[in-house]
Image 1 (cartoon, rainbow, N blue to C red):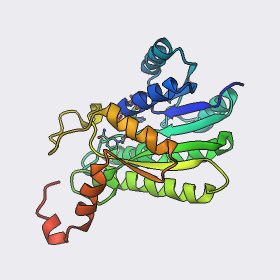
Image 2 (cartoon, helix red, strand yellow):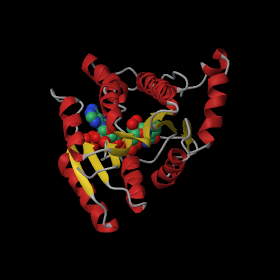
Image 3 (tube, protein in one colour):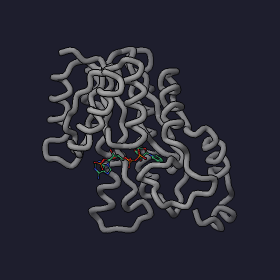
Length: 243
Ligand SMILES: NC(=O)c1ccc[n+]([C@@H]2O[C@H](COP(=O)([O-])OP(=O)(O)OC[C@H]3O[C@@H](n4cnc5c(N)ncnc54)[C@H](OP(=O)(O)O)[C@@H]3O)[C@@H](O)[C@H]2O)c1
């Protein structure tokens, strides 16, 4: 048992990779987790070479029969944690299209799978540590282009803020990250007015928000303003938008 590093759930995510590299640069050991083990091994090898860090890999498939118990057992064997990042997410079925299984998977990957794992991890996380959940501005107001995804991300955000409330003064700090549109494979080919944000710049803002123990971080920050406008648009005007 030697850990006290950061558990990165969804370590193949572009944003998560960038955050993992930043924590490695700070000298934190890493536990990289996800379902695509060959790719996660590649990410781990890259971080070891670049930063000389201690990086281990843990299998974490939210669709597996032993989820979350098998993941909890592997993480417990590794040792106590400084922090946890939840980065799993999928846009499949975001606009309500797709079969029943796709819609169930969206609710599960984007929200449902988080509480059973995060609650089980709580005894392993430092009191002074952190939990960061990658939610989305899609959760701020239901929109036709992504309301299934947005509903699950809103639930993830509410879960995070409720957990933060519960742990206040007696446990790790919980940060809900509401990401705007970031240039990753998730948004590949999307036509976004104003363009997509650079994942490294976004990761830097997220890392800073977590270190400052913020409740909510909008990254890039301008999305806080964009979403305040969208949330407050009267419905007749909102209905004219194809967003
Ligand atoms: N990019 C954006 O504009 C944006 C905006 C708002 C919020 N976010 C959120 O930020 C987080 C990171 O996103 P990203 O942009 O870095 O995307 P990404 O590179 O596509 O990463 C998504 C992660 O989720 C995992 N995943 C996808 N579908 C899954 C499934 N069905 N079951 C289990 N795991 C699955 C992927 O694992 P595999 O490699 O195994 O597929 C990967 O680790 C996600 O939670 C996303 O919803 C992103």
